[in-house]
Length: 450
Image 1 (cartoon, rainbow, N blue to C red):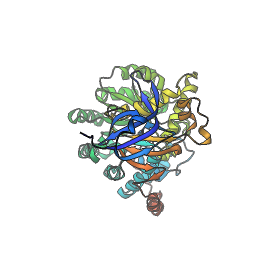
Image 2 (cartoon, helix red, strand yellow):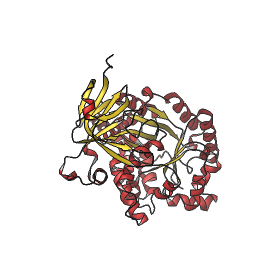
Image 3 (cartoon, one colour):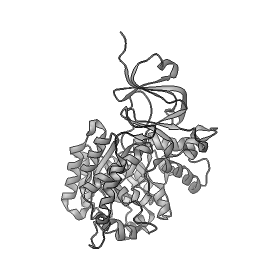
Image 4 (cartoon, rainbow, N blue to C red):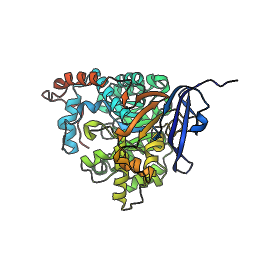
């Protein structure tokens, strides 16, 4: 009996592979067979010639990588790209960003999310973890454009119990949405904007409903020191005493994680992960970065992230990968850490694990969803190739991504976006800018005072 055609076969490429010991390799002149949105096999190109498929992509000379995961961002904040520059963290929040965010409408969130998804798809990001407001609009954009997302409706204690309830309702309403491409989380903002009672209630809701939690904690050293001075505990110790570390938690940033916090994280009964967005830390001149090596030694996955484009100016995870490798070399004083291969592991499988999708995406292997990007290394800035991993991490750019595939569906082919009309979105946002940027009302959605 003749087998039915595959949905997609990618041929004549080099495929990044993972082993069981956090190592990566490369299978040359390989083909990826995709059926029903799932990787069926990675075989030789010669073997693939005998197979039929609904769609074939000849990727000769290109590298097939698992799609990158942006483990922490605020996608709609691309609308605020560049409006709060060269400011300390407190002024950035209180004087610009939180006053402007008080103007946001659901339509603004939708337009910003659509532009952000276009940027991420073009940059090889196939999944993003978003922590923001009016998230029904973001979920609708995800459904429409074909990307994968891990979404949470953010809340502050200043909103009263309704904020926490909306976060839960969103998570339950959209869990498994977009044909399974959407996973959801509870999303308290941070220990300095959400009180212990709300954090404990969130931990209980997470246990009751089988949901993870995504929040900011120990974002920087100032927050950790302020928490110690005021309350006698670090933000990480707050997470422990409120029960959040008994469940699955994604901690955004963690550059203020102290040595005293490491045993707490190591002994947590839940699955703990940290998302690191190094470009923003440099921009804010924070004195420390995410302790990637210490967390790695504890077996805690560190996923790569960008944060929102209002602070980072970019949703380029490719840049986050390179910066993570370089900053780790500098802060540890060891040029052997992180290696390019380790950086690629962080950008792929570790990032997938960080958002709870380590068994679903993050590698190109049978049974994984077909979230795949094709990278062209023929440009002068990537030639010659002596070490493929080093070329990908330190020479290649996000603009070298030629094709982006999610769930077996091509979202960008040869740099052409197929699911988002970027000029139309830019026009929509442009029309909203005067009203969106108005700060004459004197309102803020919150007060930054850690």
